[in-house]
Image (cartoon, rainbow over all chains, first blue to last red; front, side, top):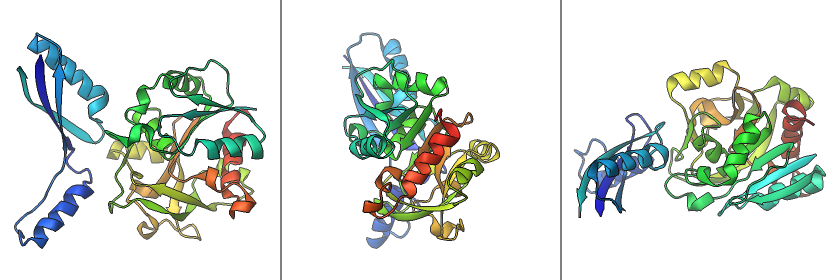
Length: 83
Length: 229
């Protein structure tokens, strides 16, 4: 089994109203030095696979075709390991 | 005339669209479940509003892989009139049948209200007896149309913007924009002008008994200006 953790975040310049709202909340807690907050998604995916390289290219295909929208999001494989 | 309404898991405007096409336009109308396929020739295919797949991941993202979308794409590629309303618009963008994406509304709110819309397309205006501002309801959380600069420029240059949020008099200043969309865009079409997407709901404003008929006007204009009607 291979476990992968993927991070999906909005591309720079794309409006992130959720991040903006959280920033306001932090300012309300007197953390006025907070400049910006960006929200994203983390996905943990388990794949039945024994080959790490093949699993990684499969994960990339999943991200390109479904998990992230290239018009508005970037993705990053944070971790990929057998386990 | 033959019409097809695609019903996804989570569609909730399918019956409204069905009612309008069947009982007001008197079209022979089928509802096709998203897991099914169709090979019938339709004059118009409509992707209705709702929350396909619970809007999970991104609105419309999972619906684009439903089996029926193969036939919707074929219909659109063959030049068939295709209209996506609200969630249907999001599905068309995710499927790359229309350019751009629909982001979360600028102010994080689900907006449900009537808006004025400037019709930005002379063929449609002509078919609406020169009426160029209409009023339709919107109801969405993710209607903030966005396209990268060069893509947006192409959309403008090709006259692909069909509806803009406006005042009652058709002024399209930013203050009339409810969700933050680029260029006040409420609806666009593809380059070939056979695939249309819009956030407003014409199917909810197509009968006098419901208070107004601008939706019927718009549908009729799309059918006669761009369909085989």
